[in-house]
Image (cartoon, rainbow, N blue to C red; front, side, top):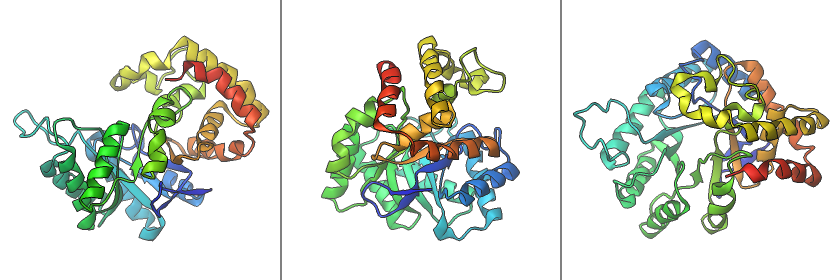
Length: 326
């Protein structure tokens, strides 16, 4: 495993990390989480990603219990969570449209700490931008989490370049803790934001990236070429919004063209897609997902494929996928 700094922060994160979206609580119980997290940790993974909204808070509970059972030294692993949608927002809840205000954020961090069973969370993200709350208020609240010792670093997820820069400049002006990382979607068919929109931020403010959906929710594994297999994300009714993209004929045809390239390098199509992401030096960590240990081990095999990605191979991959990328 190789490690990269989180932007200009001193924190070192593993090139591949393990996330819990969709899987934890829904497909992965505590026993399975312990098994997978142990396998990941033994392979050098030190970063485990989560969010308040995953499984209505239960994903944090599962990961927290797994961490308790694994009993690793706290210095040796990094845990993240994300805030935006909130829990317990009934029809009578106040501030239902203001998700990143001080009231919500101060309660959200306490709730996550309780579910994880931790004294602090290493990295907290604003899971989406909130146009209903002034950015100044959000920046002050996130900075206060760090000052209070409840979090160590903060960042954003799926924010525009303009909003990230505005948050950083507010923090700079008022001597507050600055956002150090963004968590965007990034894969072979989704490139615009990472490669173009954020381009100035890497040098200007030292932005780091922890990217999600590296396999386009499974599209880049090749398993959707003949439709949505039973048990896959594309077959889940609660993820029906993903279906059209997963069954896109042009993208599935492109994925089929990647398979021979992957085979030449001694890997799978999924490993090729993950390896391609690690070649971007702006990416601090690629967040992978798995519901079984064999899936996790296959994902980790992408690091060997990455070592064989020559400029010529990268050009062949781009020729196939770039015309379909957004």
